[in-house]
Length: 245
Figure (cartoon, rainbow, N blue to C red):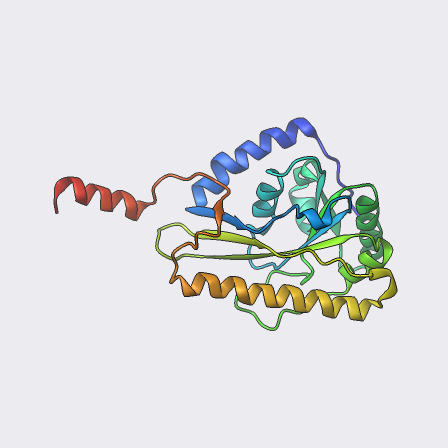
């Protein structure tokens, strides 16, 4: 497996590039609701579980994590992709190769080590990119194995919902749920997986309902994580207003 090789200077440069160019160029709005560092998880390592429905998920999580203080963040990434984009290792990415049982085991042990050393880790327990509307949400058992190896971990479920709604660029929202603080060491991996699956699946339904019930307008509960300029339709509306047509 490929371990993370964090570089502070590269991280500072790439965070600005990601925030000021990549995300701003491709998204109209990125918002967060809830707490990524909830008080109930204070003093514990944190494992963030996210649903996985787009290529952008990692960069959105990286952007959100970069606004937090006092914690080193790491991101699990498919080995094939990490070999292709090796510079992500400098940002805290490390690999998992699901085609090799030995590599999977090494990646899960490495994840537990990062947590025990005080890091926070972001993973996608579905194990693959699936359409946003795909149901039911089915999680691999890797997260459960990590929690058994590091049972003091707090799990923060983070759901991502995105789409083209009322602007020419998509909008993305992240919802951070209440932390799960269960006796992981006393539970078998199947029971843990069921708990995680139920929590993340239910949260995704709540999250999607919030957006749908607002008919594509952003609910006020989502605070901006990024400032953006006007979208094309907003410029056209402003132009129409100036010309009186």
